[in-house]
Image 1 (tube, one colour):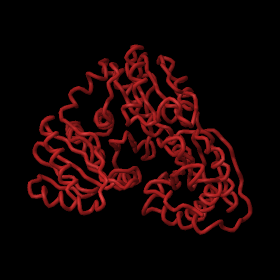
Image 2 (cartoon, rainbow, N blue to C red):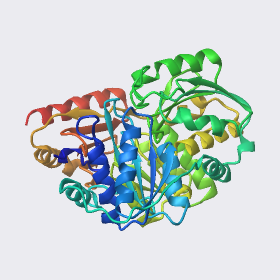
Image 3 (tube, helix red, strand yellow):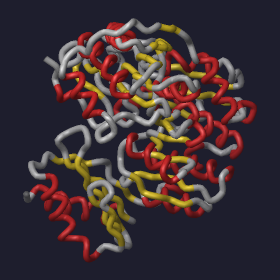
Image 4 (cartoon, rainbow, N blue to C red):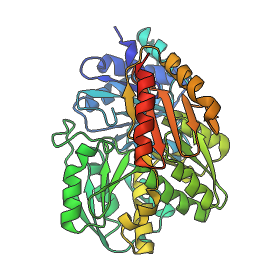
Length: 449
């Protein structure tokens, strides 16, 4: 019996073994071929304990429907996206990964041949129903091709950033025992001017040193110590499948994803004056201000890669960023590329010849809350109550994702989680006392329900 709860807004994810087993993987393979009318499907996997078994069953399901499977083996998610998008014959792709989730999880990210994700409202429900209905009949067996794309991927990166523009410097890198530890040595071999200080490059799906999630500051402590003690110009942390990237500055202090978004937006706009750049509804007001100051057009987006990628195509946006440390590039097929983020940031540091902490200091001009989660029985009622209380005072109201209300000196966004039964609050103000006051005020309203 297939557990239908594993089919999420953005991917398929659950405990493995447990909710996701080889039978699930086999049916996912068959269903992707059938639903997407795919003749060739790219397959990649991360280093989790069940990934190899799930990968094999997935391939068996694909070829059982007469389609060809192109298995690129152990890979990061950005490299997987590259393999799907850069080779024109591919109709779809499936990555076996649970991203930054703990070790007991696994799952599948599914994309079409143009690397647009299959998620809620874009095919996930249909794949869920096909998988739940049982095995499909087998047709003449398709072919399995095993190949590596790492050299082509690195060449693509070298086309987007001049490796020669990066000056000699020390860089501390925490791969978190995830997939970046497998792919980065090949990239760094092309950058001999860098002195790499590696942490946890050994592949280990148990994540023995810390959870591979750079958004959690407690996972950065080893990187912070190494960066500060080694004299590194920057510290870098990847998540499990390598599509999120976090940073600490030369002193080991965490750098907000908003600051990275603003810095990279300037770079993009220097090459593409007037371009549209997306920022999600949780982003600091500073991000839109910096985009406008650099001559760009800031547009708000919903939270979540499936929505952002679609909006990038619709608006022609050159770049997009999320508070979750995902960054999307039109020049990289409109999808995430954490390695490109790193290379661009190293190029900025090389040109500016100033430490990262000094570069980002002017961007920290507002007081911003972390994301605060509430268990709320009726999330729609909570959002409605907050709208009634604040909308008349607001300078602007956005309802593209929950509700965001902007005032002269502060703003807040509340939105229902796409992945958990939670209501999420983000808030920013001109001063810390105002932030604390407004956070307490809104928290009391939400908890009154």
